Length: 373
Image 1 (cartoon, rainbow, N blue to C red):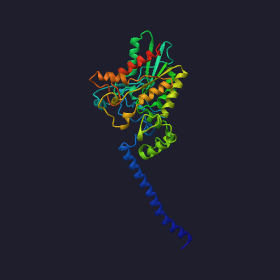
Image 2 (image 1 turned 30 degrees about the vertical axis):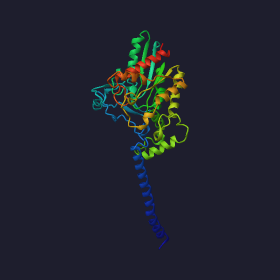
Image 3 (image 1 turned 45 degrees about the horizontal axis):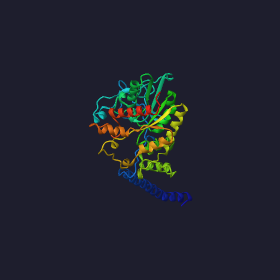
Image 4 (image 1 turned 180 degrees about the vertical axis):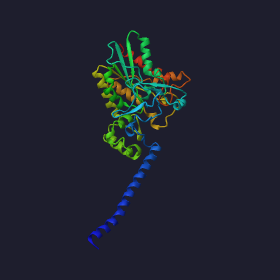
């Protein structure tokens, strides 16, 4: 046999071994993926995808069935920095099938030229106007509600009624799905140009997790097929990112295996405060309540939330870092106790009455702190 023939024979002998090794690796990874998925389904870990791990909407997709009135543009469009934003000058409705689940019918949505669910905002700001800018997620946006029923709009109405000698504007910059990381970026990109006198940041229970995973960015493969579909990859990435600093979870409002550091949220809030202070704007922190915190007998399926005292964490943070905090939880509990109706549409979205309580609390605290002219 020639030397060349001997090499060919050896190569053929090695090939099955390589294939066996590769097959073993694939089987091991599949088993590991299965175990991670089982742990997630049993609640041992929480691997729900963040915005950094799901594809951004494009102008050709309708992500949640929100159809434009007389057109075909989706409300949410992709953004290379913010992940998504709302289309400008959009007019349509919440999906009727979703609204029926919460006892509603046709609920309109309209955006202005900035893509905000708010009246048009004059630029530059009129010299006689006191402008309040509200950042937040679907609670601020007013999921399931008319624009005039959001707490931002109700605060504007209250200001106009009770303080008619001063011109006030309340700009609702809430976008469903936004975390503090997007709110900070949007403030830098657009919000500061609106010259706000007050910046209100509505915070939610899920912000700590959203801010940690959301700010990983696309450079870590967040928009790849594997990152979007493999819980094993998601677990490894999150472990590597969160495991570098053992002290960063000390003041986290989550517990046990579901613990997520909120150090990133502190950094983002500090950025917002610095940016606002540079323009002489006051900053207000508004933790939005959850239904299970208000109504006896209502439970969240996630066990850790019963011990998630995120209002206490945010109140302590605000007191130590120059924020005015407005926590409407006690007022909503009192209003709920005196009413036979729920103040929520679902587990986390206040209805018109709940939003009215939030607006009242904001007005009272802003006035009491001497923020309003």
